[in-house]
Each structure stands twice: as structure tokens, then as C-alpha cells.
Image 1 (cartoon, helix red, strand yellow):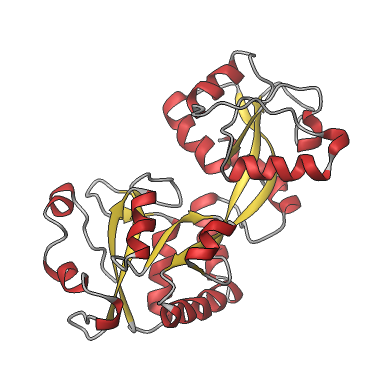
Image 2: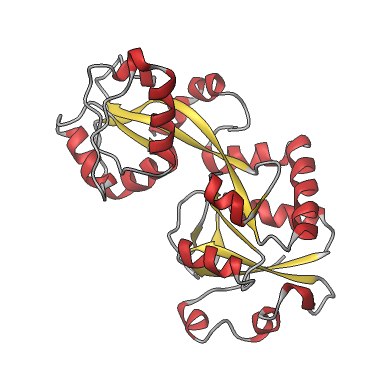
Length: 287
């Protein structure tokens, strides 16, 4: 499949040409020039490398795109994925109104979204959560190590907060003390950690790496991978046929090792393996 270029100009004029043919309902099953069914895919414009970002020509690249390319190939030309960027919440609204057939942006499962949408099964990858610490810190690798330590503040909701809330419920003796603020800044938290204000920051590894590219805080490292959280495609509920086909392709790509190779390409570790293995490869996150 060739990338569908999503330049600012194209986005402004409403995605001309072939994409206009896909703006009807899913029931119309618009076809591309080669006879494949056009599938409208919503990408988040809040990019999250290496899952998803854009190259110099504004083409979408990353693990998500390589995965979708592999799915298209596995399905032997049945579908033609055509991409459009949008804010995450707008993408989900568009999914509800059938402006898109599915959305991809390392979505976690939660009851509210499960009531509104179909989720892919199985997951197509994992988000690795980690404790970020100073390089001279030797004793903070797991959540239980945070007892008596100061964790950087977190938002009152979201996937990372849910992980900590669940941990605290199950481990009251080593519960993590969490300071709550409405809009925490990852950059400010990492700067505070570097300056000794905090003992650790709880973040996704990919988020840490992305912020570090800008900040270049030399005295920080990944102390330990805490968990790997499955991420899913989210579908409009009327797209069961597309979901079923992609589910089957995803299962085959997992079993034949294709997705493990893509994980190693983009994350430098096979996140389909267990957390112990990932932690053994942790040095690769600290380049």
C-alpha cells in the first residue's frame, strides 16, 4: 500500500479526491481503483512516536502504520486503508457517526468506550509503563519500591492513574502516595525529577523517550518496566465484518512473528514477551 499523504493543505480542503469517495456511510462500501473496499482510518494528531508520527513529507509512519500495512498485505488487497488525522476525542465522535470505520492510537480498554465501540481482539501491541528515576538511583525498579518515596504528580484519571489505583487497592501495605493535579506536565515532572524534587516519574516509555529528545536530561534513566498494557483498534459497532477480518489477520501476524519483529524495529525490544524479559533488555531504553 502507498501512504495517503495528509498534508495540512489536504486536511484543510477536506481530503480531496479518493477520500471523498469514502465519506459516505459504511454501508456504501466505496471501492478504490483496484477494487478494494475503502476503509476510513482515524489517526490521532497528538502523535506518539514510535507508535505514530509523521515524516518530513507529513506521511504517517511508525509501528501503527507498519502494522496496518502488514494487515492489508495479509488480507490480500481486500481493504484499502485511507488515513485522516484528528484530535482523539473528535476521532471517537467521528467513529460514532461513521465518518471513520476505525481509530488507532494505542487505545486502552475502559468500560465507557467498550459500551460505545467494538475493540480489536487480540491486541496489536503494548504500551510499556515505567518508573523514571535519576541515574544514581539503584533502589527504585517496581511500584513497591515507591513506599516512602515522592512520586511526581499525576492527573486524577487516565490509563496510568488507573494502573496505580489498581495497585494500591491490591497492595495496601505498599500503596503509592499519589499527588493529584489536573494537568500535569511531563516535561516539568521530568525536570523536577532531575533536580531532586521527586524520586520517580511514572510514564509510558515511549512518552519518556519523546520528551527526552527535547529536554536531553542526562541524569535520568528507566528504573524498571512496571507493566505492559495491551493496546487496541477501536471500531464503529456496525463494522463487525472489518473487525473480524483484522482480528484474524492480527492473530496470524502475532503467531508468525511479524509483530514481534516490528516491535523490535520500533521499540528495540519484543514487547510481546513478558515483563521480566523486557527488563533484561532495559539497557536499550537508556541510549
